[in-house]
Every structure is written in structure tokens, then in C-alpha cells.
Image 1 (spheres, rainbow, N blue to C red):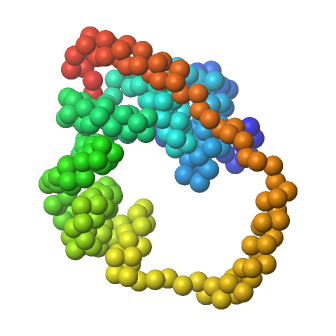
Image 2 (image 1 turned 30 degrees about the horizontal axis):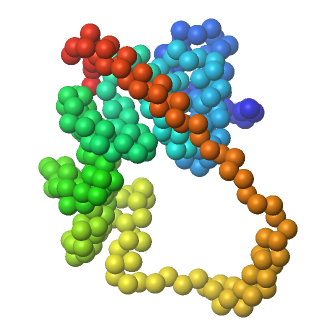
Image 3 (image 1 turned 45 degrees about the vertical axis):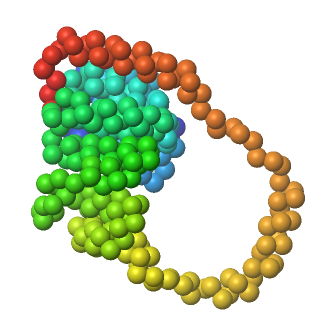
Length: 285
């Protein structure tokens, strides 16, 4: 896949660059450039990011940073079985537990919220930094909601991090999740309060707290072009109907073959657990 000339590979994190030093220079540069493309495209075009991650993985599958990047690219495209396998591989290579929350969220994505909830109670969580522990709390609350335990999801999110007035990188998301959980149990007044608190902390615009507040307040947004669009609607609808008559039926081309991958992941987990028994408390947070 083409890579712009202005992407040199020097943009990568110094720790990743250090890992790539185990590769021949030319190969390390090629892998680095593909990793930069993954990072650049992950939010705006996850499918393209995934494609670049596969190239990097083919070139350097024994580099932990490459496995981690491949995991996040797969995660962003909803390939949770594949993502979990890559995250586990990266964790075995580094011994770090920092990927534990996203691994648990992959379990949710695979339709196994009970497994995600179990991971939230395992010893690895205590080794996470504060941001990681908050992320784990968010995943656990999501798992509770998946299991139909809306009230328990509210309780799961409560804690000193939620009560703190200090604004941290994770504060807006935590407050937003709490507001959403409150709304799910019909505690609308409290939900509105926490959406407002989320908006106050959301300096980067990572949530839609302002929209949720407006919705609760009954504010309706109108499109200035609305009348013009309405006038054109009959013609547009007729055109769409005509086009639909000419188009072939859609195919189910993008079905994922995940059943085999799940079996691989389970084997991978067994190997991981065996390795963990041998390592004891050597894992670093």
C-alpha cells in the first residue's frame, strides 16, 4: 500500500523505535512507516489503518509494538477475536498488564460480558495505573449493562475517581458513562447533572455530552436548509426509488470467520495462563 513521502517513520514513539532496533535498518524503517500510517488513520479510516497494520504484522510479527498496533486496528474495525489474540501476544512479549482493560472489552465485543466482568476482578487490575483502573471500571459497567444489570452498572461506576473534582484525561468519559447509566434507570435529573459535569470536563470534545443535555432539555436543532430539502424531497425520493430498481441486491460479503479464531484465542489464553503461573508477580504494571 502506498505511503506518503512525508511519512518517514521518525514520527513513532521512542519506545517503539527502540523495539524496532532489533530489525535490520531498512526493514525497521518500513515497519515504522506502516505503524505511523496505522496511528494516523485509526480514528478517521479504521479499515485503512487495519490494512497497514497487516503489512507491519507480516514484516515484524515478533515485535510487541507491532502486535499491539495490529490489535488496536482490529479492535477499531470490530474484529474482536483477532484483536484479543494480538493483545495477548503483545502482553506475553512485554509482561505488561496495561492492555488488560481493552482485552476485557474485546470479550464484551465477542458477546462474553461475563468474562469481561470476571477479568475486572482479577489481580491484574491492581497492577494498572489510575487511568487503567478507570478504564477497567468503564468496561465492567458496560458488561453489567450488556447483561441487563442496569442498576449494578450505576454502582460499578461509583468511586473516588467519579467523586473527585480534579479533571483528568479520563474524567469526561467517566462522568458521561455515569450519566448514561443513570438515564438507563430513569434517574433523569441526576443524569442531566452528570452530563453537565461531563461537558465541563470535556475540553477535547471526546463526548457528545452537549447534545445529550440539549436532548434532555427538549431543545430541537433545525437545519437552515430544511425547507429547501423538503421541497425537493418528492423528486429525490422518486429518484432514489428509480435507482433502487436498477441496483442488484446487496451481498453478505463481509462476514467474519470468527468461530475458528475463537478456538485459537482460547488456546492462546490457556498458554497465557500457564505462562502467568510461571511468572508469578513478575508482570509489571
